[in-house]
Image (cartoon, rainbow, N blue to C red; front, top):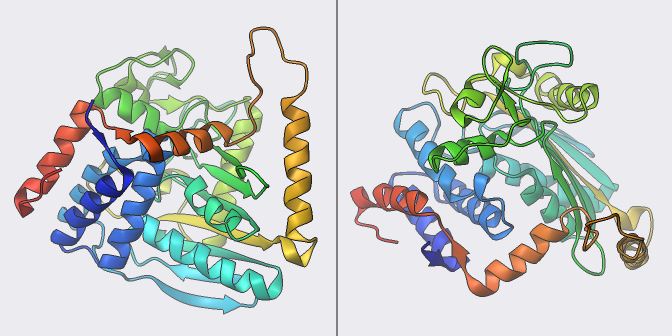
Length: 343
């Protein structure tokens, strides 16, 4: 597979977007998010998503402009109207504002409505962790998970992330309430690969290994009622709290009909308002060491903390470059051709 440095991939994505008329601030935030996903090993949310963003912009159902604005503000709360701008730009704007306000008040949370797909939730929570804060982020999506006991989808995969700083790598939870994120089915379909049984159900509610059939059907929630409950509560925080749509009332990223209308909920908690950040990070590092030193289950070589593998992957990819699958590479080349850009 072709291999590129993160900076080269980031610049190419930025150049493609700005050449097509995307606002430079929105293009920069989106390029950073896409390549961050690649660097941390989340290629399902990486540069392979650039093509669908461009397609939606060209179809006139996602704005290339920076329409992001604050519509309501309090010392520890923020409501942002994304104005159908790129989701990564809106979410980053909200998180950076939360971080700034949390330094004054101890914490701040933001509700973002009228937005679009924002990529990996961990990208935004790690922004907070880098500032000695605990970050929180979640987003709703078009319904793809069947509520527990139901045979048809209602909630989206609705990812949630929490990140906390330590003396070593930050501890970062980033999960969907489904067994896998929808992006894994999308990438498997693009690479013409099957998926493991247990990931998805077809439109008739039967287990399937065909990613296309799974996309047409529903994803399996983790832990039955527990995963279903998590997905519902993310929709409460994102859709209902923002006054935006939720579940099946949202629009699919891959259907060229209307703006997605997704919402996000992000926040930052300033550790310094509770405990000395150095003491917090030292204690979390000690806890991490204790967990990793526990007796391992049969067949387990190493116990990992949340986000540890992606953190190691980031260090590896930053040093050695990012491998891009041939179909994704060719797709990227096609995106740059109209503007004379080459990767």
